[in-house]
Length: 112
Image (cartoon, rainbow, N blue to C red; front, top):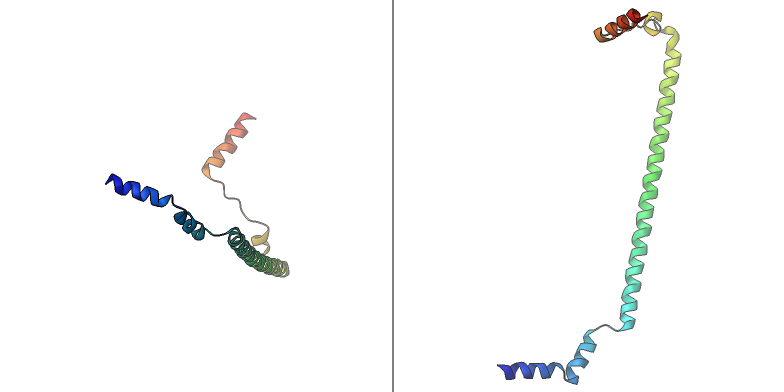
């Protein structure tokens, strides 16, 4: 068994085994090429994300513009209908006080 280990150990240090390993490892050119491919893919992905976010921003701006327009129209309708509303509904709304608020007011009056 020890002879097998020695034989295997010797076989791994032979020049033939080192040449096989060098063929399995990619060369510097291949590393640069793969790095360029990865960098290009990242650039494409970033540009796609940028386009997507710009589209979302444009859509958001359109929605906000529509909401402003609807608000302005609603306010305009309220101003138009204001003279035709009953005056007691518009100006004379009664304030309903809760019991705790009434007690607070009585205590303030008692302090004076």
